[in-house]
Image (cartoon, rainbow, N blue to C red; front, side):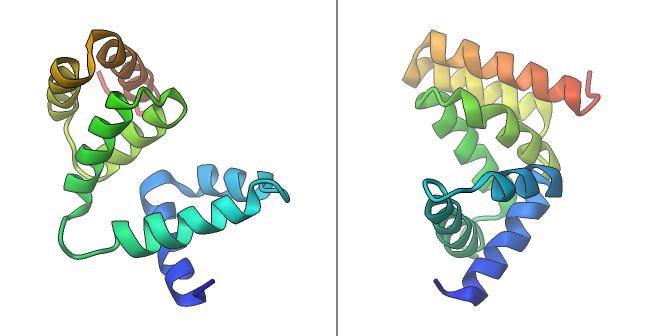
Length: 126
């Protein structure tokens, strides 16, 4: 593991997802999942999310679209909250999921909208 890249990833992961979520994830890591947590922190956050080619807002939009298309319910609400922190508006989130309906299907988009509503409620938005 590259400690410098891991630390950069951990800082960014905390900024986007929040200390509470990251602390809980890292504390729950065991022999089965510790390697995966470290890999995601170092590579997803330290290598990819921190690259200069796209800003955080763009990366959040792309992530939301992919999570909707792949129908990944366990990550959607978390990343909607992260997208809001990264400056993605509720209107933009709605548009992302509308477009996902065309390319990934209505059921996936409807599930994504449900997750967004939960995230908006948690964030005290509308």
